[in-house]
Amino acid sequence: MISMVRDDTADRPSNAPASAVAGDAPAAGRVAAALARGWRRATLGAVLVMAALGWGWLVLAVSLGGSAADMGPGMAVFAALFDRIAAFAPGLAAGGGGHGPLMPGMSAWGAVDVATVFAMWAAMVFAMMLPTAAPTFRVYAAAGGRAAAAVMAGYTSVWLALAVLATAAQAGLTAIGALAPHMAPAGVALSASVLVAAGIYQFTPLKFACLVRCRNPHAAFLDGEGAFRIGVEEGLACLGCCWAMMAVMFATGLMNLVAMAVLGVLMGLEKTTSGLFLTRFLGIVFLAGGFGLASGLFFG
Image (tube, rainbow, N blue to C red):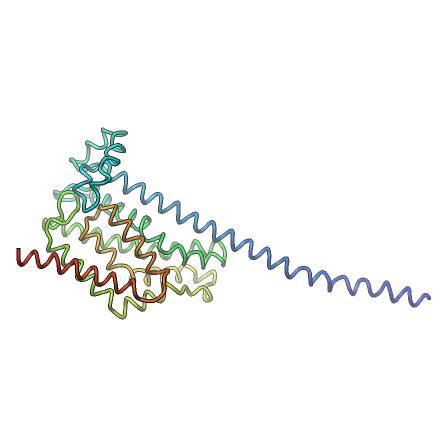
């Protein structure tokens, strides 16, 4: 009887850890899944906040910058809305040499003009490009908040570097008179050239390779130290995928918010859909638009 009692008490401690281990595994999995969901939501929230800041800056720049109808096709529809926004700050709307405080002048640029244009391109990056990369950021967010932030920082640094180049390109086009006072093309030659170039690029192997990378984030290779580098790689892939469509803004008007929104949606769809139908269709549309403008240029 004594031995039976001893055997019974000896079995209890040996069985307890086994049941505890069996119960800990699902609990740990649930905690990890909950943390991953939380970081994914936080990452998407950060993207939304930055995109809102970008759009807010651009809307304010257009509203304070004079006639919205002169900023490109489709903008006349929202002219009344921009005028109402400008009415809240009539003093600011009257400043900036007739172009508003958030837009550059058309004479020789100074340091303030350069900074203003760079801020505009940075706002375009936040408004247009970050939302298209939201699915990519969401994948990497499963590795934790620090890794997700580093990936986003690496991605954004690539597009901000492009903003520097775009600022220089805009300065050159302004100096030779290729851009009108409200940053719309001064003639059809620039628009036609940009559209044809963008259309051709839609059919290149580099476009297809970058598109594949954008659709398939390398989350399996993410670690704490390499997160920023992975973000730079994702940014370069996105740049290779979308730079031509971003350049279309030079054809539609750099402050054409309608074109900006449409192009942003198209770039997002291109990254999230499968196949190449949309990519090739857009290429045909750009080529048709470019050659159509060019035919009017040469044949009146």
